[in-house]
Image (tube, rainbow, N blue to C red; front, side):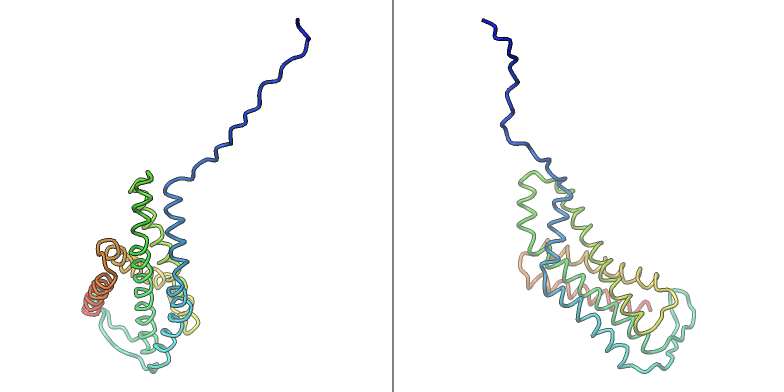
Length: 207
């Protein structure tokens, strides 16, 4: 017997599925979190760079120093304290970025393997490492450039920031390589410091 009442469709009681984030975004987020959790690196950025660059600037007199730049053949006469301050900023940026990337790669190796086993493409994991390296180098280089401008005014601060950024990228890539390939922390740190010293010596020879 028809009652004339329309039956409403049954409600879907299954839980709604939230969209999964992109594998690259997941890997990049965890890589950046790993950097932020490195408290020692944060202390170095906040304290070591200002103290080191200040000592390099104040410990050397402002007497002009004349030398020939091999890349262009021009004679330059920068102030001695400005030259040592740039060198100190360069050394601080390379040291900190290299240490950050080595620590993140060494500590996050097991987690990266777990992400790969969970289905994350290794290409996205590599791109996440490169993204974190780029952001870390840019942040530390910008911080060092701003500190440099508190001591003296560079004529081309953009080029100074670009040079610090490229140096951070180079030494950070070494940190990633040693942190990923070597199994023990002592071996990785020794290899990274050795490679950094050889590059620094070659850089001095080119100047």
